[in-house]
Image 1 (tube, rainbow, N blue to C red):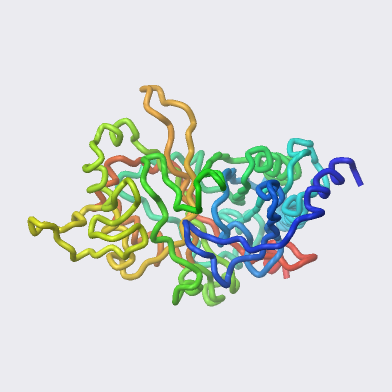
Image 2: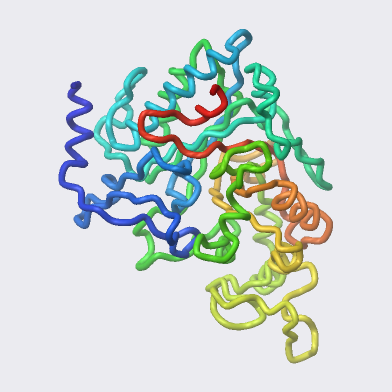
Length: 403
């Protein structure tokens, strides 16, 4: 055992047990995976989320403070055997890193002094992977290309990809360490296509758990579906009838730049009308508190709709989209400025659903046509990935493809 293994494992030695809770401010409920979380001051670094389980980690857990999203393309000639070996190696590595141990190979000591920090690694497969790996007959029907939406400005060099990886943790070095290890282990089999870094609120930054805010200053994620709601599993996870196994899902990934200079020039009351919620506390303009259901029929003293016809919460509401539901797990990003001096900043949008044609696609079509917020957004990168179920102890993600 190396000294790095000893130091990282020691951080876990006296950890107590607890449960990871909360998705966008709500309890995870029965579907949450157990996570170890000590009660002393070192809890943030020592919290661990198991890699193995019926569903991949990084879906139901609360969004961590840091994320690295990346996509890889198989190298020519890697084929089925190369993909299988890579998935075996990546799964073994992700399991070790999630426990706070060093990597089995390509270790670089970047996170030498850190615990696992709630690290999760989630893998997904792009449509192009199946042909390259000789698995065309295993490609699920729901992995059809996303349509073009009005207003899209998609950079294909930063989109799509054969293999998608979502790495989250509450420490930036832990996240980057995991990505670098996976990248080095992929050498000769897969090359990095694109990489994006994001962030959210650090646990403990507020006096009590609260729904996070995006770079527009808006409370973001209040209406995310909760695992204890009726029909949650059917809307988020696959049931095995679409060519993808039970417990899988589909991830839509979008890089959405916010036109912050334009947005910040609006007075607060105008911003609130665009969103349909108060900026101060996230409460709907129809009344109540943040968690009060939006009353789309409510009217103000003048008889006008309290929530404007083109307000984001109205246009995006499941009630306005035939019940379409997604589990969103977004992160902010800030990558300097563009040539015109405006911020290159916004949202790394990640949404999980059982069927994109019934989740993301109808909602985005409606948003692109009638959402007042769309004037302040630019969709600049996009991807759709089939996310396999989790791996059992001793197994690896995607193992069912090779049976």
